[in-house]
Amino acid sequence: MATGISKSSSSTMDRRTEPPISSAVTSAQIHASAFIFGRRPIEYVCAFNLERRALDLLGAITVVPGAGSAWRKRVIHDVGGFSADTLAEDTDLTLAIRRLGYGVRYDDEAIAYTEVPESTATLLRQRFRWLYGTLQSAWKHRGALFRPKYGALGFIGLPCIWLFQMALPLVSPVAEIAMVAALAAGRWEIVASYGAALFALELVAGLLAYALEGERPDELMWLPAQRIYYRVMLLYVAGRALVAAIKGAWVEWIKVERATVSPHPLHSN
Image (cartoon, rainbow, N blue to C red; front, side):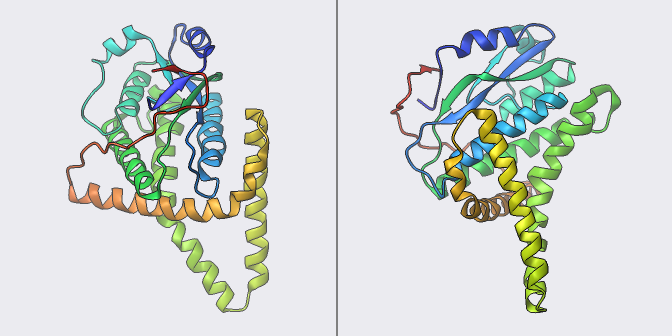
């Protein structure tokens, strides 16, 4: 079992998917036993769930993830069902539905407990598939980019995919090079001040994310190590996805091995 949902999730998502809303996204929690620098709980709380809250407010959600979601069956039929055109069929379907004018909402009362990869190697394979499939979907639906007809999807949702999932990870080494150059020039005060300001900003965002989830922020003690690990991982995945796209390489679905035991009372999906 890869994912299960809490007992109350079905009813809360059902209320969320009344017309003109086509889909509802759950709040993702994890129930795997292995963690790397506390990365996974921090990532799910501070990145996935906080980002979904923000995109929900802006009406710009671009993916209803398979790990926990509810769809209106008729709307799926209207767009021809799931497509095999990309490695991220959930993103592809979400974008197709959004282009029809339907909305997607985030439901923080619906909880999905999902298993995650338990090694860095497995995690990299999973994230490569996610990113490559997301880029395939964004390219497939590029006709909606900056088109007033598609509102927040065209001006916020799709640009965010290209900017934050692809461009920023690839240009991030420039910041490290600038930091090393500044240190070599003896300007450690500037490096220290900018580094402290950036960490303070990320810490405030993390505290906000955990407060919105109603969870204790103890895991944020791993934030510095997590950020180093995460940046390197994103750079590798984005670089590999870019090379594969330029080569036009055929990328197959990558199955991630998962455990089968959950400590939470779940309804399996």
